[in-house]
Image 1: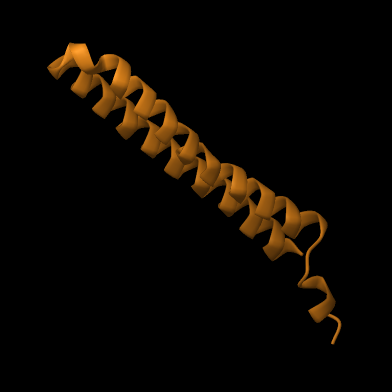
Image 2 (image 1 turned 180 degrees about the vertical axis):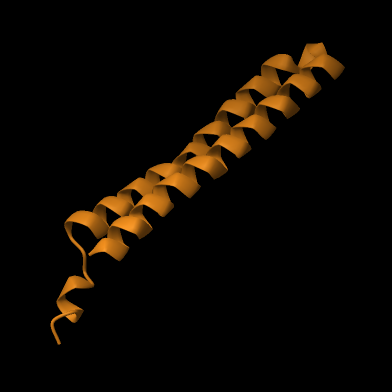
Length: 81
């Protein structure tokens, strides 16, 4: 059970770290594109929000898998025998 808690913590932590790096890159590229072509800021902003929504799905899936492993672990039955 302790390995399950460790794996769940790593799953949530690494998912959050990857998403934070992704949002930093996304925001930087958006600001760079807006500075180069200010007339396209509205279109770039729309695309940025779409990508941000897709990027945000990764840690949500990670949290769901971690909660599954913590509360309804399918591997617990294999420990008995």
